[in-house]
Length: 373
Image (cartoon, rainbow, N blue to C red; front, side, top):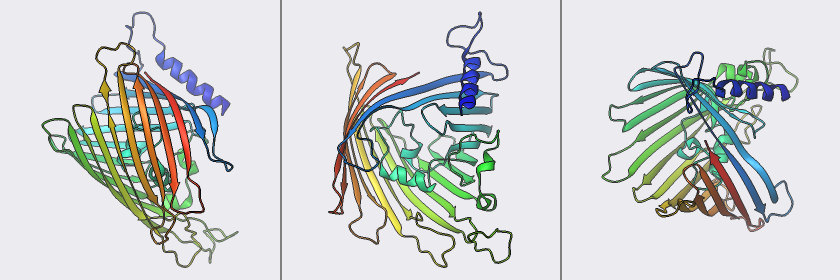
């Protein structure tokens, strides 16, 4: 791990360093026609009134510390790498995009599946500190989030209709551990069966502001082990895999006056209890949704605080619709204060409630200072 961090830091410095004669804002590269460097850091304080368990109830920490490199190798090809020095899985994105035509693009490598508007949104731009229960659930089961695969994106000439569809390994977000071979961490099942994800977006033309509506589908293949102590290659080895589906839709409206609203809903198979040695398994159905609203108010006559942004988000999450009394909810109320374009101070109060009377609701306060470059 130590040598890996040193290597990445050395690579970054070699890319950022510029000799005399290169103007400020430019980066000299060996092969790329253009190199863009960006990133952000989120320093956070959290207080949670929950008692016991594994929850952090009073802590300062660096939530994210990301560096992104996007190299334009040619008019049609771009390579992107993103790392997070605050994460144990330091490698986030590593992919190449190729555009053979104006309306067609291929993406290959490790990147986010084309599922869920909230999951695809950068953590530096979310209206609240965290993305919520639904996003955590979808990413945890592999319906959304980062994975290794190949995706095609097709759009119309006006860019109002965009279809993204990809095939993925099912290994999920992986860090470099065995040389340069991420595939070494994949299982026998992932070598045989692949996952599928697709997203269709429609952006109608508005007189003021912007609006988009989208639908998503994600297919996961679960299972992949033999019977205990039995190799998959041995006769009589117990082996079973099944495919599970998640589907959903989302919409967002952003007006020129600074008001924005986001809505998302998801349903599908909750296969978290799936065991491939079971003779029969019927996955329970989950359903979840959230609505978020914010108002970005610019302060014209202020040179320090340039904007304030009140934010509100409500989420309902039911991991098993066949069982009563297991629904959770999140209510987030927040205020973001902007010091120019690149510094944002976010403050959130989040109330986590439970339908089950035996569980006590708890409140969390989070304050985060974010810097972009």
